[in-house]
Length: 76
Image (cartoon, rainbow, N blue to C red; front, side, top):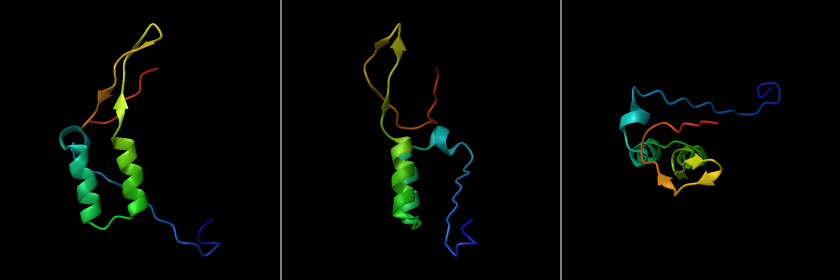
């Protein structure tokens, strides 16, 4: 579709062995910036990596837990 409309597209993949398990999120974001990755992409990745999570038991939400490294997991 982008080719037909003469529009540029950008596809980025990040495949570093165990990077999301062992490397702090802040270092991943810093490396992306240092390597001139598009600021909007860095911002999106940063927002996906940072933030907090919490445990919920019987409908009661626990205290926020800050995640600094590791892959975000979801359990429903």
